[in-house]
Length: 215
Image 1 (cartoon, one colour):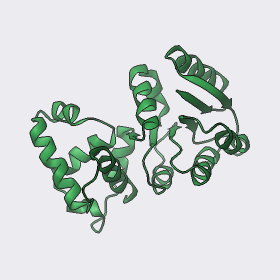
Image 2 (cartoon, rainbow, N blue to C red; image 1 turned 90 degrees about the vertical axis):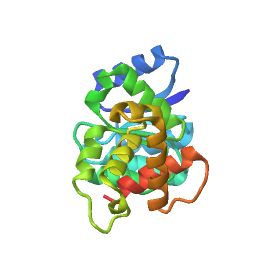
Image 3 (cartoon, helix red, strand yellow; image 1 turned 90 degrees about the horizontal axis):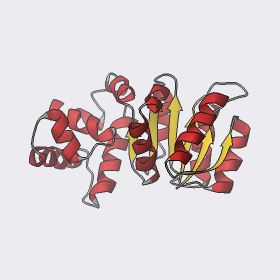
Image 4 (cartoon, rainbow, N blue to C red; image 1 turned 30 degrees about the horizontal axis):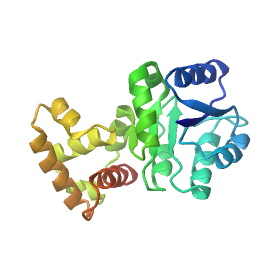
């Protein structure tokens, strides 16, 4: 699997390269600034890009803007964003492009190697990988007229876990319910969010995007 990294801190950048290459990923390029990121993404078209939100020269939102611009030029380009803090606007902007293949993790999640690698693979496969802390803060901004306002508290809980990228089996284990109960909740979620029948994985991604981008 081909990965492009955008990270300005040399130690973290080198650590990401070593970690990914040790688990059979191929790092096609590692950039350390915003201006280089878009050309690199368009040139390499990696299977997934791991991108820091804040990059030189201004350390504001260069990484995010570059990721959004690259996805406009290469629709569906998988992007996993890393950030030091929960930045709600950045998360919503990334998600408004739709189509899945996006993730948003806090940098301290990288220390959990198995979780981080699973997130990289999930985004590369077209899914979503959202940090629980990001989801929690987005939930706090829920509005009455958002599509997810139709959901029951349990359905919102199920969808929040779905946004983390968990399978029905994992959701059932987390909530101490049966997979059959989770399946019923997910079907209710799809119906309430007006998502027409399609491949299950695609509907899961669209449900998560609706859930997050409406906040």
